[in-house]
Image (cartoon, rainbow, N blue to C red):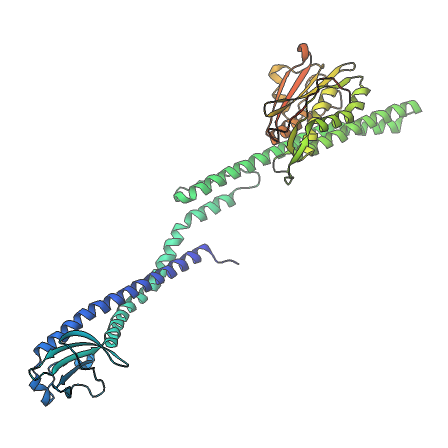
Length: 451
């Protein structure tokens, strides 16, 4: 299991604090070295200027702290011989000039102050530079120990502070857990920081969409169950009628009616599946490809021509222009099929269904016009709802055709308009779909063709 956010934040703060402390201590160390250099240089000068050379011969050292500071006092004769040294272990190189200087021996670097003597010799006060660094390190370490002792308190404070800051997340989780599958939840966190605002807004939007989708699904299932009850009841009655038929003619009539009921139930189930597939997010998105809309329209009209001929309806393509549409294919086919099939089923025998496909600017315009009973202007928006039937539709109508068409039009980024048919008779459905590209439409055929 991954570590908690609280633990990660605390560890991050502690590590960041330790790194920052180390950087600060490193800077403090170098600052201490610089200040100690100035301090010890002043001490070297003070000792060198105030020390009486004649006292050195009797072993009287005027600097009682020289052993702690590793300060070496040496008295050089004019001939370069060493007359006196305060240390028997360390020897600083002889100075060349008076004043402060840095001297180098094979193993040690020295900081030295020399004062010229009357006999041409030197009174030298020197100190190893490593001693200064050691003193600076000890001073820094003494400052570091209190800081290290504060780390446990810093960890405890960080834990409590982060726990307090993460309280809005716990409030958010509690509110989400109180919601149920059929209960819309809106998250409200009063003390949420501003950074959490976009997350809460996006979450509320997602919850609202999910609640709306659940309501629509529940309503869809209820409507589907209600609509399927009638054809299935009819099928059951026709089965009983066929079983109780006293003659071959009665049995044949019952079986024909049974077949009609089964066909209607099959059609409704097929359209329910098509409608479910056209729902946003209901199925994985298929890759888009360029579809020749004129070719697809001709194929669908050929498939539906027997249905129109069976009702003695004149179905034809009055005008067409080749054009390309970006689509996965099945949705566009479902759009055309339901649109033309709906027109055929709402047109009485001997009527006419005209289909045209033209290009206007960057849009393909698909127009399906029939000579049926039409739809009143104040009802044209309502027919896009599921299971809404208008006019003198035949008994096999399901009220799903235009709902499927509307969803597919929305999926393709187009628009749909219901209008009066030619000469005010029937209904004309105009669908506008964006073209795949500016150069995808060419040619023109202005003639009515039968499938």
